[in-house]
Amino acid sequence: MNINDSLKSAGIVPVIVLDEVEKAEALGAALIAGGVNCAEVTFRVAGADQVISRLVKAYPDMLVGAGTVLTIEQLYAAKAAGAKFCVAPGLNPTVVKEALKIGMPFIPGVATPSEIECALELGLDTVKFFPAEQAGGINYIKAVSAAYTSLKFMPTGGVNAKNILNYIAYDKVIACGGSWIVAKNLLKESNWDEVTRLCKEVVAQIKEVRG
Image (tube, rainbow, N blue to C red; front, side, top):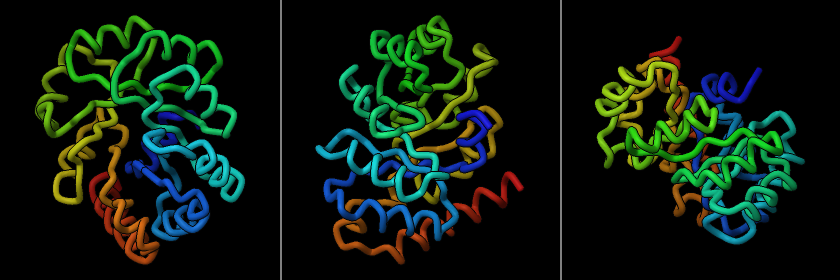
């Protein structure tokens, strides 16, 4: 199963900002208990590579990726930690080319047709639409998909329990990035039961649409 198939199977990609690396395993357990077997650990805080490494070692079958990968240094840190894919909020051709060179699946962020064409020129078939809600939501994705028929999207930014089905129901969307199921306050309080509950809730929603 390739990365796209794995992401589509998941439907939801928790966008994790965790600065307490010692909580990685407990968070992974909470996600898995809720039926979510993937995670995007962002490089917004120090120690992201350690969180990735701990998740990969504790849960070898989990699809663990790195988010907010802005530099080649972060790309290699993610690879060394065992990340299976990388995501960025924008499209930096230098970083994307290096990722492709080392065989790391990379999903850059786009918000305009020009950025989409840059992604296609680099040989990519999947992009992160960011910030999704603020940049036009599902209606924007449908509009640009008419011109770029081969492209798949992973909308992130403003996606939540109330609007995720609008995205998931569209066949060009492989998965949505979401932070509400791993909100900072939940991680700070180690409220793993609530993380699991929110995961179960969104997994049930996705199953309702995709079967």
